[in-house]
Length: 447
Image (cartoon, rainbow, N blue to C red):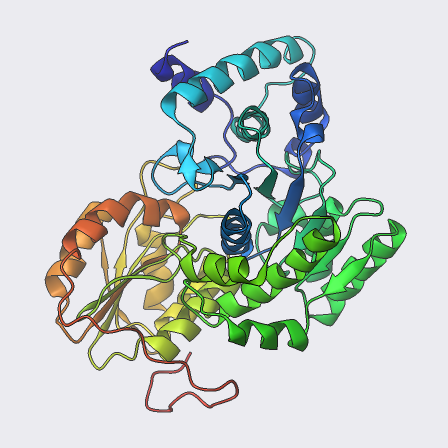
């Protein structure tokens, strides 16, 4: 296959990032069958397997950066991508090349065609997973960091035996697939726990914490719970990623590094400092410009929206008006997301991303905002580009403009936003964080 043919074949598969999966769709038999035809590459790799409601991508990026700084060749598998699908499969920070991706997809297609003779069609994400495992083996990665796509127990990545299993936290997201309660969601995410394999958990809520403890005990898996000691230890490090919530993620990473050291990896302290200070993970409360402040973000559930707002209040005090470009997927808790956002932002630019049928119509979002009291200002736009142009024309130097609600929205607008904001006027760093426990100024809008 040519590169174009390979991509066309891949994108022609069932894609649950476009059409939401049902619980019946989430099974591992096809994935195992495809990997068996490929020689089970996942069994020949040293892996770290990471799940969680929020922060798992940032945690994966931090962990990969530290391991690379320690001198290891590191594979990184994440999803979804911001701009190009090759971002999902990286080695030492470099996305898989067109030539490599073509070769991997050609090999995977041969296995898929055999498996599909007696199985339902293999999905887009299952193929992504196979490509990742296969590529990391071909590139002789010393270790690979694997981010779960959805949940954990029945996720396509859950066919490996990692050095460490990681659960960053538990929150409400993907309830149609994972269950309506935090405990049900925790049970699904705890499905990545393997017998005898250490587990690092950053979850602190009693209900889901009890579930994780029970599953770990059932599998005789040593459980490391990330508490205040790890959190305090992060204060010794400079973090490249913005936001107090990133210290929670860094605390999880520090615990994982301890497990990896016990597994025989050499990870010196300077590598930890370098990795945490230099990691790059775009569109996570990423400031593209100051005066006006332009923030590119991928928050797409209630916990991540709350983390975004906490960071904006603490680190980007704004004397002017606050503008937000917002689009969201229909399987999210978007009424609650809008309620949180309306407590902070003054101007809403409601839109959609691409032609994805999962996207909530801006008209429906407008109905929800119209019912808010007080009612925020909002405008509707048929395209994300139109929303950006209107917002960019409206912002004053003392204002703040944020893009959030979806990875797909951030990916669609990131090139335009970076181009428009590429000249920093009066650049200054974000405000230094006050000590933990310091009350946030009551002069700022609450919510």
